[in-house]
Length: 147
Figure 1 (tube, rainbow, N blue to C red):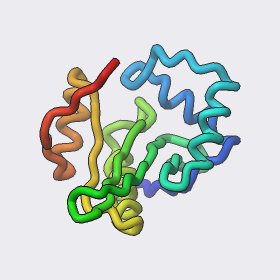
Figure 2 (figure 1 turned 90 degrees about the vertical axis):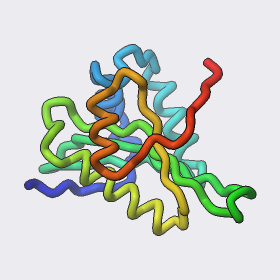
Figure 3 (figure 1 turned 45 degrees about the horizontal axis):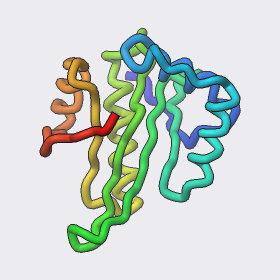
Figure 4 (figure 1 turned 180 degrees about the vertical axis):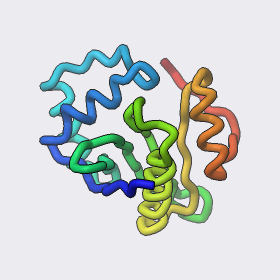
């Protein structure tokens, strides 16, 4: 199995990250302009506990995810890690790259002191649900969103 190289994203990576996020199985209706995406990326990089990563294979970005760490007053002050925007290039899914990304995210969250790691995914993304369950994630509660 090929091994990914995972690192924090740079502004130069943003076009490829946006292409990944725009895949049909992710957010095909994403309408951010290049300028909006750059502004948001700069906000992310200025936020101390919000990090955006890219996964590379043979110098090509093939995956991405964000890790947000939330310090809590509840749960005895435990930190909560939230993984978002987890994407592997569609044509490479099923090759173990998602597993490598998720293992890296879990290790990174542990280094940052997270006691719990969560993620969310759409109701219709059954393959993603199965994948996360294969990694040991379990449905925990019910998420509510104000849309």
